[in-house]
Image (cartoon, rainbow, N blue to C red; front, side, top):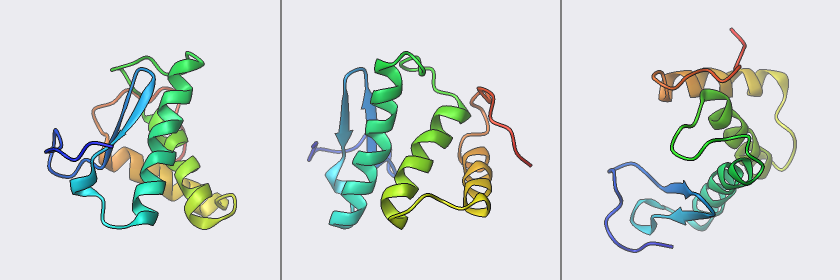
Length: 105
């Protein structure tokens, strides 16, 4: 947990090589904090498994992290419609990242 100023105004967390950082100034609730840790820990796991290269994420890496976050938030696996919405969300939030194989319409 980091209680200082976050690197960007809306960033709640960040995955570094072997740890997830939670920027407490941008976290609104306990559920928000846990969802952020789940999301960022997904990136850390992907880096440890060499699925994600540190400092070079793809839309697919972000999608996998958002999908894992949804699993926590919903308490179940996201439906097909929810997964498609996650794909669209990732494309909106990270248009400049390479796709990394992310498909969908």
